[in-house]
Amino acid sequence: MEILNDYGIVLALLGAVLVALVPGIASAKGVSMGGIAGAGVITENPSLFGKILILQLLPGTQGIYGLLIAFITLSQIGVLGGSGDISFIKGFLYLAACMPMIIVGYTSCIRQTKASLASMNVVAKRPDQFGKAMIFPAMVETYAILALLISLLAVNGVGGLNI
Amino acid sequence: MKKLISSASSKNEMTDKQYLYAVSRIRFKEMALLGRADIEQLMNCKTEKDCLRYLSDKGWGREGQDESSEQLLTAEREKTWELMDELIDDMSVFHTFLYGNDYHNLKAAIKQAYKGIEDFNLYISNCTIEPKLIDQVVKEQDFSVLPEHMRKAAEEAYQIQLHTGDSQLCDIIIDKAALDAIYSKGKSSKNELLAQYVEIKVAVADINIAIRSVKTGKDEEFLKRALAECESLDIQKLIDSAKEGIESIYEYLSTTEYSDAVPALRKSSQAFECWCDNRIIEYIKPQKYNPFTLSPLVAYYLARENEIKTVRIILSGMRNDISDTVIRERLREMYV
Image (cartoon, rainbow over all chains, first blue to last red; front, top):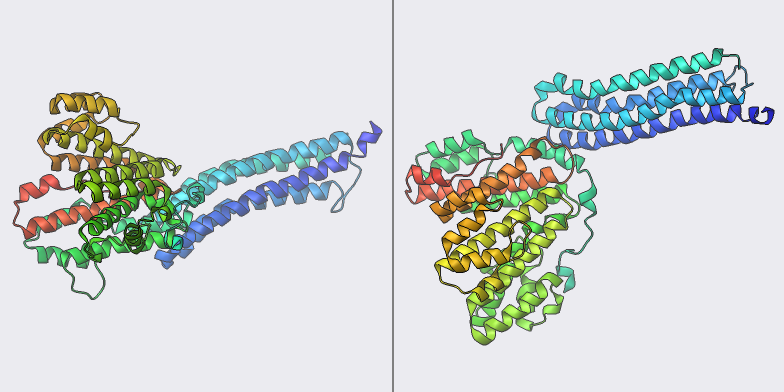
């Protein structure tokens, strides 16, 4: 068990890396797709830039949430200060704590991108309906926020455990 | 010489893509499509000139040019292709709509070679193979440079025209090859809408051929040569029912997905044509809400074609003093 304890930090770091990587990749893809579709709208009506930009950026938030969880995890496991003495169980718990943001961050981002693109099509045809169109992708954000909350509480909670 | 042939065999990589930029732009373009209210406005115009003025105000035709009806419609078709060319990297996905023109040009080239005349006005310019190349191929009888789907039919049709002078048989061979090429291109496009479009296009052509063959007393052999295979119709059953008469064809169609076409077929060929166009519009309407894939682009193209056809009906109706009721009977459903 003592040998395994040497790898606790590895598991915790793996969680931090994945939570920064996975939602980050999804956000990059989502914002890129939004940019492509947005360019099409702007080609025809440049005055819609502001509205389109908001819709393009919506899938970008998951990457930020992932970064936040990664940052807190790194702070707690001793990579960015604090104690570096992480047992195997604790390392595993950090990894598990990152999981909601990794999985929900990725899936919600992909789905939010689709909703954003559909809303861009609405704005292209009916710019006056921007408010309503923005609500649809924004609703997907709820689940990313819930995952962020759980991961945040879990990472903080694991830090307080004496195992 | 082969360079003149568009890359018909190039991979359909674009069909797997999302066409995000293109679909966004198409959403804007859709707003400029003529709706039911515009068609009513056109119908309320007193003369063809008034119609042209209304269309010009809607942005139809080339700017600053005083165009005739035909020039205006040609300009609109050109604009659609220019837009598609701008939006789609690999235009081979749209070859489904151009194969018909290629085969028309082949027919024109064979007829010209047979009669020893040369008239480039008979060729349609919007195609996948340069008309010049087709003309050259027929003159030199070197059919190997043609795409595979056209090669065999071109050679056979040429030989029949040259040795028997049977223009009808020559046309049948080319028309069937065209339908086969359109069908296989649409089905292999991996795009559901294109696959649906070719299905209805070929089935409608088969129904038309079967009905015309009954009316003109053609035999089974003719039908076997003329009818193209498709999934929604059993060609053998269609041939069998055609042998028994027109009512038998209606009976057979009543058992297929084209059962609601029977009343239109009983009415007139124009009513059937109208039914076909309306059915295509019904198929494509859900694409107005689809933000991805090639389908909204295909739908826009078909909507534009439908729009141009409807405007042509109104303009020619006005020009020839056809009654309002008759014109209205032929008007198509609009996409928007």
